[in-house]
Length: 289
Image (cartoon, rainbow, N blue to C red; front, side, top):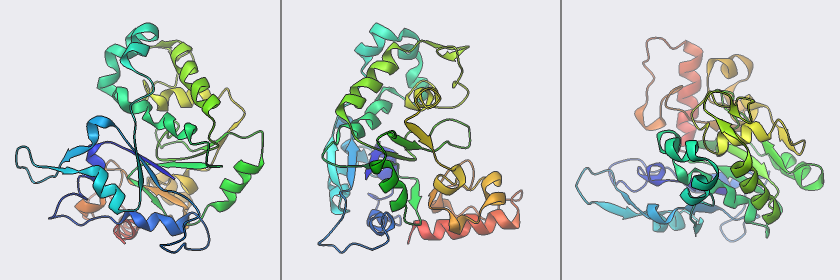
């Protein structure tokens, strides 16, 4: 299980004045049986960029930092310090428009997620980010992916229509696929008006990074299988709340633009329905559990 990260995701965890989120809670929610401290059926990885090892601690004091690697290790993560596989030099040779504008979008480090495909010592990898909350086991989805040679990736879309490249994704690792996707990203034409290969996928934040490219690739590669968004990437938006009880979603994704962030306790919003207030509050309580 992978969490790809930049400094801001664990800033609260390194702050003495805030409530720490216990990342260990993810362990029991992949399989039906909760593993003990001594036995884990999977390894929790955190991908950390070399420039993001030391992060501001949220105290507001100039130069006050904490070691995010040490924090993640204390939570049971195996930390991989890796650079982005798609570099400025790569973009300069292939995508000059993206090179000029990617920092206005997701930043050049966005491609760090691709390293998940290199973990061939594992049969499957689940990619998450810090705002992803696991609620119910999804072992069946992993087993199906591993058993089916025609499937490589199980993905979900975000509420903006783009493929979620870090919120929730299950992949079968393959170094060959890693390099294939890297080369496809670099060789597929991108235009600011017409998008990826003239087919769009450029109407959301992340369009210049893997989210935009994955959205294009998912329409071309039959080995990429879509999962139900409200079950596996419920962002507690009105569409999902009307379709499914949040408690029945296997995976919930927190968004400051929908429910607000859990630490802000935003339950007095004047435009929220009673159903939304109840859903957001109940899911936020589990976030800190």
